[in-house]
Amino acid sequence: MYTMNEELQKVMAVAEQWTREPYDAETREQVKAMINAEDKTELIDAFYRTLEFGTGGLRGIMGPGTNRMNKYIVAQATQGYANYLLKVQREGGFENVQNGRVAVVVGHDCRNNGRLFAETVANIFSANGIQVYLFESLRPTPEVSFAIRHLKAQGGVNVTASHNPKEYNGYKAYWEDGSQVLQPHDQGIIDEVNKVSLKDVKWEADKKLIEIIGGEMDYDYMMAVKKVMIDQDSILRQKNLNIVYTPMHGAGRQIVPMCLRSWGFQNIHVVPEQMVIDGNFPTVVSPNPENAEAMTMGINLGTKLGADLVIASDPDADRIAIVCRNDKGEWVIINGNQTNIMYHYYIINNMKRLGKMRPDMYIVKTIVTSELIRKIADAQGITLTDEYTGFKWIANRIRMWEGKRKYIGGGEESFGFLPYDAVRDKCSPSAICLICEIAAYAKDNGMTLYDYLLKIYEDYGFQRETTINVVRPGKTGAEEIQQMMRNYRENPPREIAGEKVVKIKDFQLLKQCELINGEWKKNNIEMPLNATSNVLQYFTEDGLKVSVRPSGTEPKIKFYFEIPVNTIKGKAFTGKDYEEKTAQAEARVPAIRKSLGI
Image (cartoon, rainbow, N blue to C red; front, side):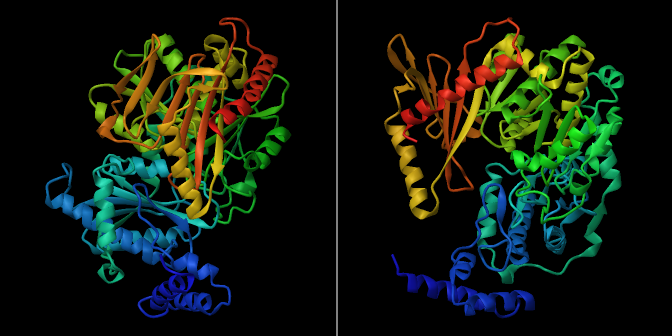
């Protein structure tokens, strides 16, 4: 332990280095201002640690300092990543290196400093003798993933902070299959990054090794997205489906309308104020389409135009949000679980109807995503796998079964879906086109998208998914979260809201306990790469599922509740039923929380 004065002295010593060359004049002046400020809070936060390069890359607030996203931190990360790529090449770890030279794809979204960071990344890779394919301007995250595969590159970087507030930017590292890096390469990159100091960075770009890409890649990507289409006839009959789309000032602004038109949709409207590229996101509080507030302008335009659907993608165009009309004509936001339920139900049923389904096809969900998807898969005889949270694990499953089975869709509750294997990350352009196809099919059969969701509940029963975030900031908060997980692990609940717990899954220990004939039986859980995750799950005899998971990037612990409500299978499920059953499920939340002590 050391005192606050000692901590400040350490911070001041590091900050002083940033007031001299090689740091640029603007950075030096900004740091001097922080040092000279009476309130040292900003200085301490900017320099008390080095922004950690984690398994997904970097993400942080932009500004000068070791704990900030800036070109110097980005440069060190890139040098470490370059060192690792070249190390793997020397060891013969790549199969498709062309002309003996490692290649990477570099992209960025609409965020402030995105182009600066992307060009910094490209320059440093090229300075290390690595071929770089740099997108000419902002592009969706899934297009970067597609380009890595399409160009047979060995890796890639996308500069984005996804749906975080405007102050943030980030750095996502990708591997040769187009997915975010997984073990053992994630730790290998981290180890190399941690060895790099600023003096190790090779800054002088080799411009001959930087190739600008854009329009041709857009076309190839759009053609890949078009192959996702299942039922073109329904689309052609309902080509005037009234669609409102907003890119939230981000990377979907051109490619999403292009893809929709390529599928045959002709009545597409955009929110003009949110088509403007702007990393300050002036029209929303936060550019996260999961937040109802962010959909306000789209809904207002949808009301004015009498739209069937309002759809949004986040700044890097990997996540989506869907708003449709209920049986009263009111706008309702379809949550991430419901979105995934509809995708899987539609893909399976319509591929079967059109004779496109094969025995080797499979679907994927994450362990915290709705179990209703499993009911659908089991009833239809379709293979379903459960993977850890994060699309890199869905991509890993595709990689494991490539050439053996055919992937036809996978998603997670946090508003992400991937309906094809040409991309290995969440993909809003393809997901948006597919949800519009589902709406067209529903309309072709006298239903709205909302009616289609009710039909699924009619066929498979109703359940309500709810996520509770318990925030515990600071060092003491992190310790409290760790203690909560220890308590749940060592003293698991035997009842939740009056229901007996009959199964417990611990993905950190890869153990499962199940109550069979009054006795607890222990079994191992098999997960890809024998990877573990700090997630606990409890299942009750009446079908309630509770998942507990600390956030990896924020000071909070997340609780996922899946609450089934009794319905009569095959009995018409109406909008009134939906409202009543939703209220019944939500009325149980306080008792569930009390059982868990939250």
